[in-house]
Length: 394
Image (cartoon, rainbow, N blue to C red; front, side):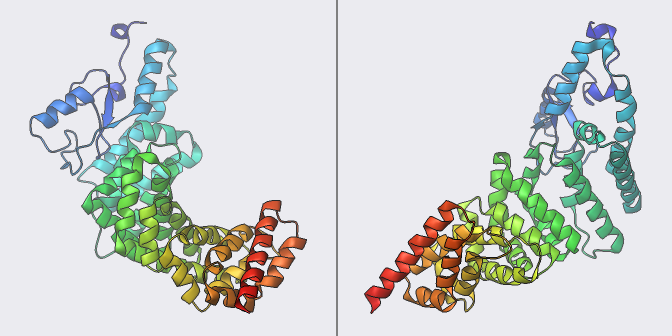
């Protein structure tokens, strides 16, 4: 079927040229244009989005692969293209316009987000269509464009709904749009929300950090977040709060530790003491991320300052010793043994603290348990180290 004989769906037309997209790209506002058309617009000195007229703080053009793929399907299938598609997507386009409208009040936008939630709950496949029409960058733009300093109840609910929608789309979406956080004003909004938001907002932003840290496309954004002292101070404090938010904080910190520069900054902000507190608090919980916290502690001990912090903390070595063997599970045992190896090898103080905390008994229990052969080998090595050092010191 030739394209000339087919009615081109409005979604497949560039808003500038009104022609069929050939290379669709999305702006930070969530609007999609044909690359050649928007490049001409920008080259002419225009610094706004042609449709919304919003100022473009970030002129980056992100390829809309989902829309390109859909257009290719339409061209190949002709009239066999699913007629229900446009019926499904038109209401979503209308909802997007509601969110973009400068006349829409916060209450209107909140109702629009609620409608989106209901629609996607009824038919989860609609998330795919939302991504095709550029919902993800639009939601992020709304989220980080401007923070209400009053944090009114209505605004807080709006932010919570925005984050809920973003996290629903994130697993299937392209994460490149998260690079808007490289822009200073957007990162500032992110940090302010994290500092003053509700527990739900904090948890959601932690999940966002995990997504940013997991993609090579957003490595620079991950590094910029890791340089923000206010954010690092807040997330380190969250880990020590003994709440549901502390679990999300552990996941976000684990993700941020993918970069060496982030690890060093986190240690500077007191993460070692925070992890120790979390591990000790986890003893009173049925389920926790103590093993994850222990793995991060092991990773950070490659930094000399981290070793010093662990040894100097009155409960530091004791917390690690308790992780060597736990009746409930053996997750974290290997990391605990390795961590003790790292600090005990050169430090008499660490060895004395470990022995006083009962490390010898813990290691013997490991050798009699169902732990992995690798963990048992590490335990034997630590026992030999402690014994040889003990002999040298006598």
